[in-house]
Amino acid sequence: SQQLAEEVDKLSSQLNFEQERQLILRPYLVNKAKRGVIGKSRYAVRLRSQLKQAASTRDSVIIFGEPGLEKDNLAALIHFGSNARREPIIKVDCSKLQASGAELFGRVGGKPGLIEALGEGTLIFNNIQQLPQELLPSIIELVKTNKYTLVNRPGENLVEEKVCLARIIIISEKNIPVLNSVVKNLIKVPPLRVRKEDIDEQVKYYINLISRNKCLTKPKTTPEALRKLQTYDFPNNLRELESIVERALIQLQGCTDITEEIVWQSQSKKKQYRLNLLNKYPDLRHFLRSDWY
View 1 (tube, rainbow, N blue to C red):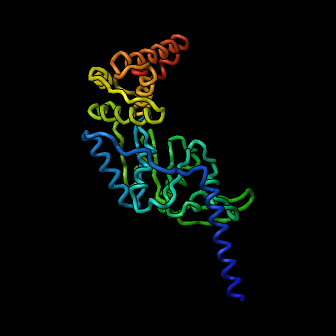
View 2 (tube, one colour; view 1 turned 180 degrees about the vertical axis):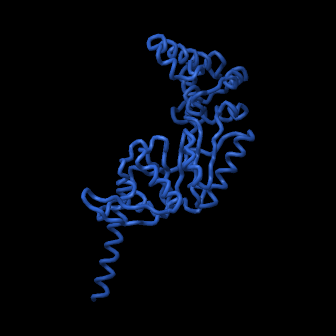
View 3 (cartoon, rainbow, N blue to C red; view 1 turned 30 degrees about the vertical axis):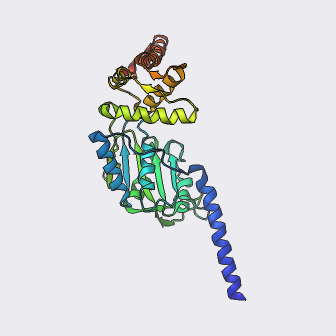
C-alpha cells in the first residue's frame, strides 16, 4: 500500500506540474503557421530551402530582415516542419521582458520559468533588438551553452543552473554581431521589392484569404494593376501589400476587377495622408526614409 501511495503521489505531482506548465505557456503559445513562402522567384526558392534546412536540426536560428516580412511566421514554419512539431512553440516579445529575466528563467525556489515549462519545444525571441541590455549576456550564454541560471530573490545569493532543452529562434530587424557569432543558422529574409515576380501569386493569395474571411466574391487583378504594384517598393513589405489588397477589395463597390485606378487610389490616399502629416510635423522628415513620403 505504501508503494501504491507513492505512485499516486508521483502521478499527482506530474499532473500538477503539467497544469502549471500549461498556465505558464498559454499567453505565449503559437498555435500554427499562417502559410508557407509564396512565389517561385530564386529568393523564394532559397528561403524555402533555408527554412527546410533549419527545420532538420535543433540548432539555434536567427531570422533577420526588414519590418513587415512576417518573420515570426517563418519561425513557426521551422517549428511545424521539424520533428518537434508536437511540442509547444511560444513567442516572447523582447520589449516586454523584465530586465531580471525572472519570467524567462524562473526564480530560485519559485515557479518554473518559461524555458523550463517549454521543455523540448521552440522559443521565439521576437524583436531581439528591443531586449533589455541587462539580459543580453544571459541570452548569449543560453544560446552558446544551452544553460541558464535561475534568478535570485532580493537578498539571496544562491546559484542554481539548469539546462535548456528548447530550440531557440531569434527574430531581429537589426544586425547584432555578438549574437551572430554564437547562432548556428542565419536566415536573411529578402524584402518584397527584390521579389517582383512573386507579387502576382502573393496578391492572389491575399485576395483568396480576404474574400473568404469577408464573404466577398473573388475579383481578378488586371495586368495594369499588377504592373503598378510591381513598380512600387513596399517599405512595409508583405504587411503593406496585404493592406493594399484589402483596401482595394473594400473599394471595388460591385466591380469584378481590381484595376490600376483602384490600387493607385488607395496608394494616393495613403501618400496624401503622409504628406499632410509631414506638413503638420516637418521635423519628422529627418527621421523617415525618403520612400515613406
